[in-house]
Amino acid sequence: MIGEPARAEPLIIEGLRREDADQQRGRAFHAYWLASAQLRLGKLDEACTSAGLALDLAAVIDSPRVSGHVQELHRRMLPYAREAPVLAFEQRLREALG
Image (cartoon, rainbow, N blue to C red; front, side, top):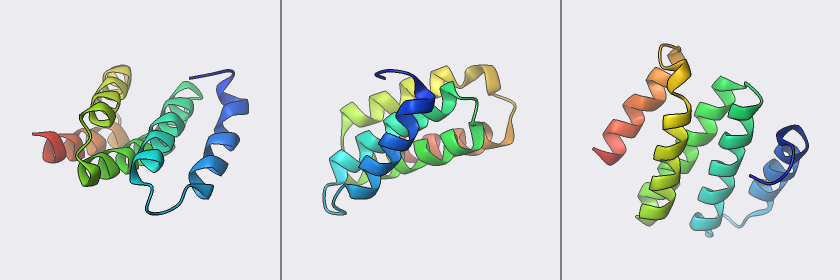
């Protein structure tokens, strides 16, 4: 993550919005970066939603690299392991990656 998350978040959102729908890999990385920034900002619900998007896109493009980033992000969510959004995200992660 480059820079301050509060400044990066709107830029990443705009990058994700501008990414062509058929550019699944680029969208997956933008979603991961967004989830990472949101987690650093304490926006747990939003971070889990963005991480879910990254996970979905990683599954579509069958990208071990993006999947690895999403798993690393999940490890960073461990302090919030009992929170509902994280529990829901963990379930999606298990379903997607086994």
